[in-house]
Length: 152
Image (cartoon, rainbow, N blue to C red; front, top):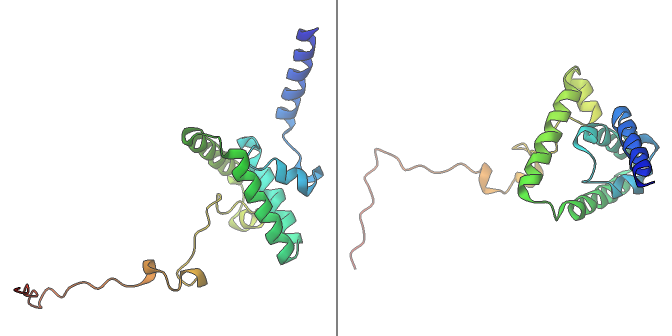
């Protein structure tokens, strides 16, 4: 009996892997619950669905949804080792690269797969206005005489 049940479960797993995950039929709460646990090969479709839903929401609603996603992802991955996390990130990157291979830049941007999960600020971003990273570093003038040490 146990072999029969394991065969049924294995068959169901193979069928789900063959057809991939369809996230469009899941509720927002279901998408939040699976954050951080989605198989790397399904992450591009998951992110595309999240992107579509967030675009359809109003700003405060989208912000709350995104915060719930982040909290769920953090909770679901907190016990993962750094080695596993790096391997997962690499597998996700490969899956996204495969998904975007035949797309134009515009299609990639519309799909929400354009940044591989990394948010990079430009120099003109409000958050970066006062940061040290964007301030020029003063270099000493090579022609100017070196400052004399003070005698005490």
